[in-house]
Image (cartoon, rainbow, N blue to C red; front, top):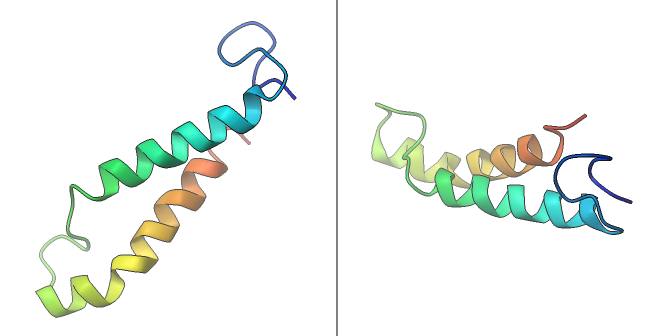
Length: 64
C-alpha cells in the first residue's frame, strides 16, 4: 500500500516505510526531552516509557 498517490512513499509498501520512518524520527526527538518539563527527576524517570509510547503511537496515527 503506498503512503500517497502523488507525494511521498508512492511505491508498494510505502505506507509501512513511512510509518517506520516517522516513528523512528519521533522517538529520536523524544530522547532530546525530559518529560514532563519541570517535573522532579524521579517523576520523569517513572514516566519515560509512557512518554516514549505516546510519541510512537502519535507518530503512527499522524496521517489518519
